[in-house]
Amino acid sequence: MREHDPNTKGGPNGHSRRDFLRGSSMAAATAVLTGHATTALDEARAAEEGPKVLSGTAEISLKVNGQDQKVSVEPRSTLLDTLRQTGWT
Image (cartoon, rainbow, N blue to C red):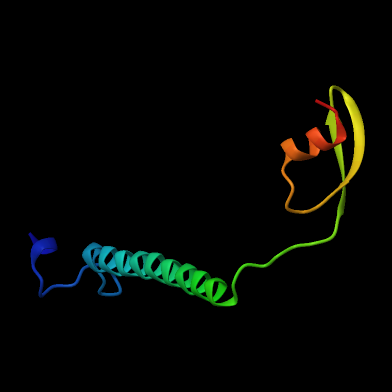
């Protein structure tokens, strides 16, 4: 019953399994809570800055019906829009 006695410490360094599990659970909880807080701060900063509008064109390569096709598209256009505009569908 030595393991259940809170006044005695087990192991050569005076640490018990219970101490180890308590410390491990605290470390895991801290990591989880810190991760959520960091994500929330990043989202708050992004909301303050407002949405970023991308403009210009980007050169992309698509494989359509087994053939490679190169096309310039706006960053906000969808694949469906791109296919319709080029007449590949």
